[in-house]
Image 1 (cartoon, rainbow, N blue to C red):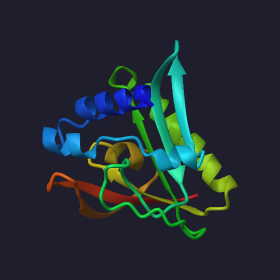
Image 2 (cartoon, helix red, strand yellow):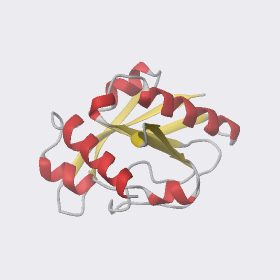
Image 3 (cartoon, rainbow, N blue to C red):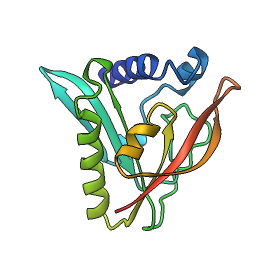
Image 4 (cartoon, rainbow, N blue to C red):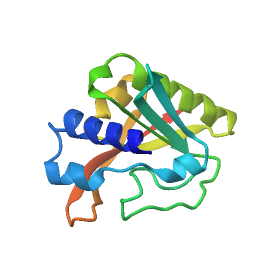
Length: 158
């Protein structure tokens, strides 16, 4: 878990700096252990180091690690799903996130889902649009420190 926490921290703090304040990033940090318990979390390793991670969920929570206050861990119906990924900044734009997303989408289809629904950070919005996701409504997620995190709900039909 420490390697995942370190990757998530460096990824968020370096890659999301143009969209979020330091306080927002700190409050949003965290591993989503529910994805690990559900066995729907993937990692990409190079030379023993985790350089990318991500997963998908059958649960209603669309964003965030264990620290997010708005978690909804009830299972979804088979209409929608969510996927998420993070990459070490040194490996950004090297198809790591795309590989994780493709693996998630394949697993989602095999699980019987027809659509993917997720909440993208403002940083990830263009990545998902390039992966054929349609932009939906923008909203803010309340954070534990009293701030909120602007995000966008996006969808893709599989």
